[in-house]
Length: 467
Figure 1: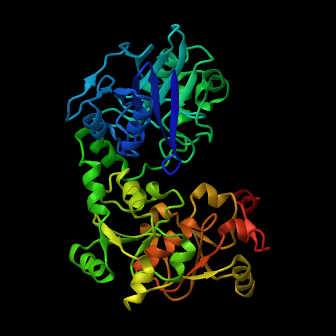
Figure 2 (figure 1 turned 30 degrees about the horizontal axis):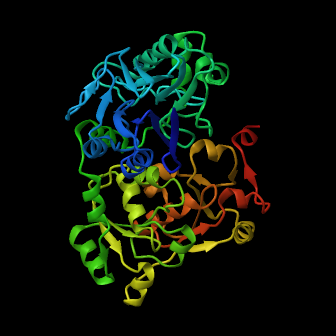
Figure 3 (figure 1 turned 120 degrees about the vertical axis):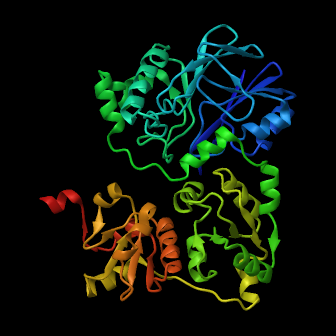
């Protein structure tokens, strides 16, 4: 028996490869099919099933392309209505993969079709559960994403409680929990950095499983939920209705464009110029109106949060050699309209004599010097509200990056805006957006609050202000 977790940090997502006696099953695959096919080919195994725990909202699953390429059967649990052929499993139904058995446990609550798959080994012992977004390490799935009709998030939270109590909690403590996500995913609020654990540990330490009643559970899981990213609903729709082949998406997006062709294509299509280089490189020179979302951070979730239209044409500026990777990472979250990339990157753009823009950056020490000279300088903190209240520069305004467009009217064009986040990734995204919206006098504070706190600049917390 082989169980391999294939974890993708950018999406905080875990897919699973299960193999026994020449047969394999994939659980919750990402959109690219090659990793799964190659694993099976190396072992001489045939992919028999593709199990989907639910209609994922935070990424586009690779189940359709994988099924076409391998002949595997796509399996969903009850209440999963799709626009393409699948096997609709019933609660308790069993499937064999070599000497293993996989049993369907319908666990609605995160979504109506949410299903947990129980893996039973050759000796008949319960070995592991693949819980999707029903149970995470340290958390449970948010119950506010599948509201429809007269049902509310409280109704779904109640369903989730029943699912956990009747289907998962009765299982033995030594059963291994393999969830679909870890820390960093917006599908929960308190997920651990650990990506697997024993069920016994979760029974003891997962806050949601400590609730002594359904009412208490509902209050706990709903408390502190933030607004779901806008692209979630569109990704769920693609997973239900289908999507374009990843091969066609990759071929179209991996089209090299000279500086002249790039400029013409952007003007003709209205494409968004997305620059995925590191913040420091972006600051030194970029195409005017380009948006910077670096590949080396939470790239796909920030693309989803800040580019509302999945059909928006996108033209890429990337580090050399990372063009295809960028197209793929966009496709993972449903952004399939990439029209190509700037061949030769910014060096080619500059060599062609094209216009460039820059962002002024200062060190935390320089920021501290200017803040001491004038404590009323405009400071924009783009971290999340809970981060902000844990420690912020005196007189700073908190305009979270997720909702930055909503705060534009409150920002000034007349004086420098010193923009920072926790470490520098989000602040450069914010600066690029502000620049594209006509705020020319922005200043990026390198190192964010982590560096600022070391300079002696007064930093408050919500508690200290209230005392």
